[in-house]
Length: 174
Image 1 (cartoon, rainbow, N blue to C red):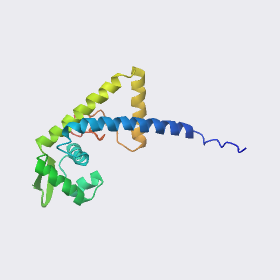
Image 2 (image 1 turned 45 degrees about the horizontal axis):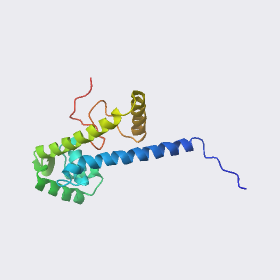
Image 3 (image 1 turned 180 degrees about the vertical axis):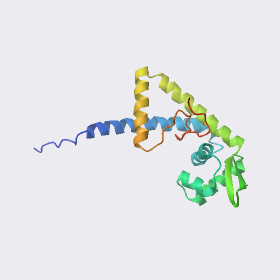
Image 4 (image 1 turned 90 degrees about the vertical axis):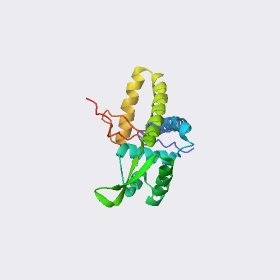
């Protein structure tokens, strides 16, 4: 009979945490999908990501936007063209560099981001309210450690957008 090999120290713990994070991520994806359901006739998930990036990072040029999205500029341009046609993004000449185009959210684009974020926040709040206070505190600690380990910057008390980026336009916590 072969001897059972013991997993390296901490491996079982890592596996348990990984399973828990995967399960939680399924819940968060479901929350995200439900929050986008009311705008799915207006924007696709990738287009919504683009709107969030513009909302988070402000006006941007095509290359920077494509880089932030992790797509080719041609892919970003196709999304932008559709969002411009829908009235969610505007394209203007950069006054500082007339050869460059600046892309920014329109008020309608900002409204979509705010509405979806509000729906997502409401549903997450409902879930968190079902937890005991000690569980909430542990969750904050665990998620903070998780995001730090993943290299995500801490929000610093600012509101987060749907993709987890800190909103630079939100007032800093005092």
